[in-house]
Image (cartoon, rainbow, N blue to C red; front, side, top):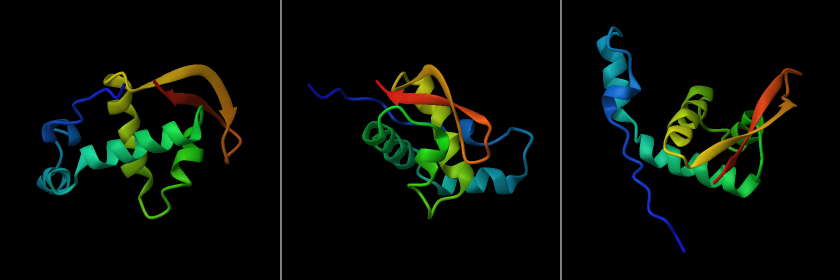
Length: 100
């Protein structure tokens, strides 16, 4: 059974209110729903994973384009944190996540 989710993210949540007008322009120029879907599908494909594992699959995207999607996916209940931590490329621990 496939579930439908509302991926819409209000543009106002994608930039700081006190940020420059270029921040708003940048937020309006991206498709956060497309990026969220892509990141969610990658997390599903990888199974329990850390951010470095997800990001290495999106070489053509900036760090923040990918990592900014985690919060929205967590807030929507599409991804959960497993409670485990694993070392990333830097040697520092990263939280493990998985798709629900």
